Length: 424
Image (cartoon, rainbow, N blue to C red; front, side, top):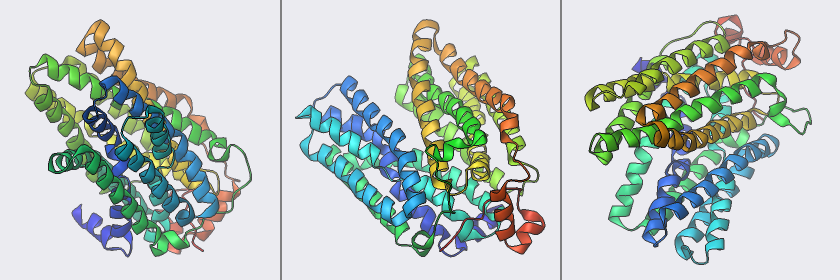
């Protein structure tokens, strides 16, 4: 298992691109907690901190697909590096000016969120040209999903350490400086500089003209809803068991550990068959594992249930990457991956908001039932839209892609319709 990942990371440019992307995404991974900590340090209320975080989140959700489309049109360096600088500048203005005047703080959040570079989609667009073989690309997708889980766990810890070492404002500046350096490391690399999207058909909908992609985005909206509701329900559970910080941290760590184990195991297998069918099975298992959380047993048992609930999250994300690549219209791959980020993020925000009333009206169990309902809704979407995932055999994009694959991929390792990516 580990040998496959080590072989992948030893491939030229692979480790640099993965680490650079993770570092570049650090500001986004820590934004929610960073905004709250800084706002409170400046004397602002939790309500204000929540509104500022929401402004950042909505702006980010809008900016990701727009910048992803720009990357597909103009290349990675021309879009990602300027956007990384502008996003960091927005956070720097926020850190220096503080909350007075408040309109400036809101404007800074809009700029920081809207200009966050689409490094996630950019990395996934680069993997085929860097790794060559489609089986290795699918392993890279799994590793990417696992690394994402680690980053969203470690990132906030690093931020709080920086706050303890310096101050909230300095921590904000340092994290965003690291983000710029990470983006710079990616865009000056040879794969990023030479990558070009496939020629695209002019269409105002861009990637969203794909029915398969729309179905996937709808499903992952509900996966995000499930995950967002768990984060809120876990706080209520921790309150009920007398140790919010400790118990909540334990549950979130268990959820992340489960995702880590599941992602590593998934990436170690060379999967046969269509990714769309596989995704339906994985999401069904994901939904099934969310339901026992509503039992809310003691802390030890609940920690085990949280770990089990996380097992199929990273595999679902990794499999979704393959489906995105198969269904993104020609020349829209970065935009398509960015839409997946947006759909998942908006779903998580809705889940966070929706779990609150459920908890207040029906208790902690109801909060976790929202997660189970989200998982079930995601599965239902995938089942009801199965025909949307069918790829027509006369699709010229698919024929061209298969023709351009290396001989060994065409003879067995490539899934039908897998895009190998293009380089200039």
